[in-house]
Amino acid sequence: MMEATQIPQHMLSKDPFSTWLGIKILSVEVGKVSLGMQVRPEMLNSMGKAHGGISYSLADTAFGFTANTHGKYALSIESSINHIEALEAGDFLTATCTLDLPKNRLGFHIVEVKRGEELVALFKGVVYRTNKDWV
Image 1 (spheres, rainbow, N blue to C red):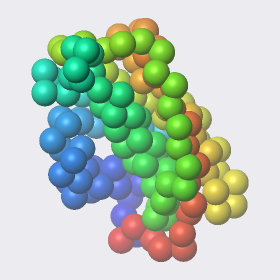
Image 2 (image 1 turned 90 degrees about the horizontal axis):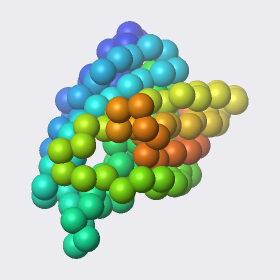
Image 3 (image 1 turned 135 degrees about the vertical axis):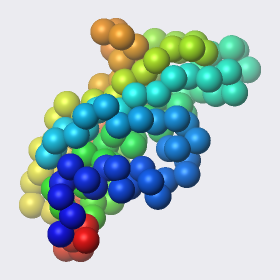
Image 4 (image 1 turned 180 degrees about the horizontal axis):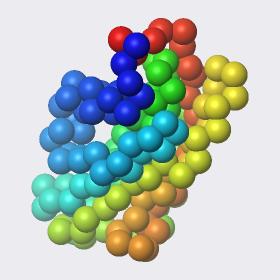
């Protein structure tokens, strides 16, 4: 079985979308992953602010990586996000899964997306944990 701390790097290496976003792994432990990325001009919407999908995608990636650190394939079955602050090109964002509550086959997660110390989005997600091990 793959070491828990190796799983997010392995997942990122096979994820062209997160790679295109420029997502970098900042820290990994079982049940907690922190990621970072910079908002680029091509990520802006028609109002000159970051498209909501940018912070959502960063949070969703942190959620997925964290859920999989338990060593079993975990698949998202529900997620949502609250956008708290508008984001600009050049903003550096971090996403940290701050809650990882495994309950049998389900895992419940909260991800905080921040610009510096400022909370800019709050994401919650639920995963289903399969029997398949990360090898």
